[in-house]
Length: 154
Image (cartoon, rainbow, N blue to C red; front, side, top):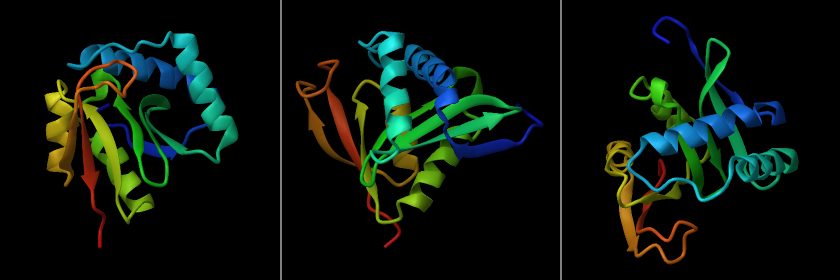
């Protein structure tokens, strides 16, 4: 990854297997609960979102033609930002987050598991503020989480 350019582009349905791989490997490497959804469920969900296109946007980060990360977001929420473990700490997550900020300049929120201290620190470094802590009773994993908000460029 050292000398190859990072490319950000809109995701396509053909990217779904790569998105699922990034999703599962990034979660497994992070201090957060494993996904409670089977890989085929994750694939079906992401494929449906890409096929519809009116619900959210998904962008991928590629290096040398290999998907190394992705961001999925709505008008007001960053639902997914995952980077493959081998590509972490190389600017991929920051590039994806900066893209979302450009596309959503009025601000947006996200949820991160309380246990995921590296992600919380990453978002704080990029201007997000912790607004709400929950016991996790409202998320699929039933694990405490934090709502973080970036207020935008205004």
